[in-house]
Amino acid sequence: MLADCSSALADGTFIRDKHDPDEFHAGRTERTFRTVVSDDAKASLEEDLKNKAYDVELYHDAKYNSQIASLIPKPEVCTLTVQGSGIDAYDTIATSVQDSLVVAYDSIGPKVFAEDRSIFKKALHLGKPRFTRIHRPQKR
Image (cartoon, rainbow, N blue to C red; front, side, top):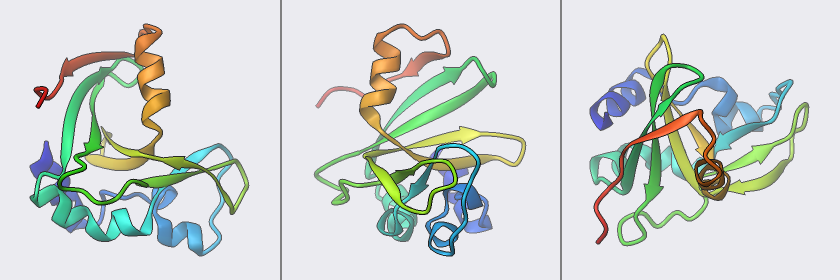
């Protein structure tokens, strides 16, 4: 999975326009809430993937019948605590902090976006049928 991410990063398809901080800074808006990867996370993604700076939890996404991965920063390797921001519909100002990254697959390949880990965990805890855990990293 990380090899797919590195390949998409090299191809320029890993961070799509909707989630790209450069597009956000250029004034791009969307019709719905979205998250944008932080400038620092974007700049360090290649190195962080190579250094395995994230714990990876794999899930099956029933809505899209595909695999997704939650990338949780390892504090001893990844110095970034903010992975991105949340932006409301039609807005150009960030309204929330996102502390993890999610990799999802579509017809183009893997794509990354920022996520608030607590919201993701709450959905899992409440038994939302959309996500089924496939793999969790070993406890240290």
